Image 1 (spheres, helix red, strand yellow):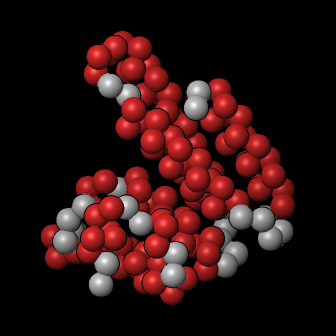
Image 2 (cartoon, one colour):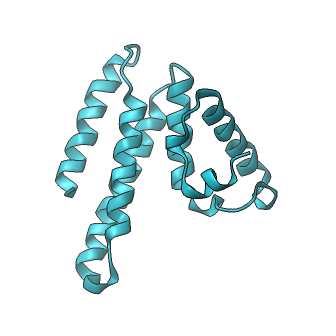
Image 3 (cartoon, one colour):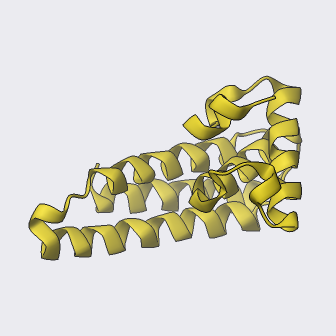
Length: 136
């Protein structure tokens, strides 16, 4: 997926979501999906073509920032919206791939809340590999 397509998709979600925050569309889920697509593209950046990849990587990270800020600005209207907001937080926090006892207390509390919402909704598709392996 190219950067221009990602930006267009993010803009479309923003335009639909912001003026209509009371409607029952899954804006947070859509933003999470876009975030994961970008994350996948970031993983494909290789050091072989360093200059080209550095520019692409910078653009992808910028796109992720826009997705996160958009999601943060939209109020969660239900538990499912909250799940996707927390999932984006989790996917952005790579340093949380450690036991909760080793996390700082604020991260441990937020991570615990994230796992609780995942369990309540039975929505394990938002988990990272580390989370799936360590889900209690």
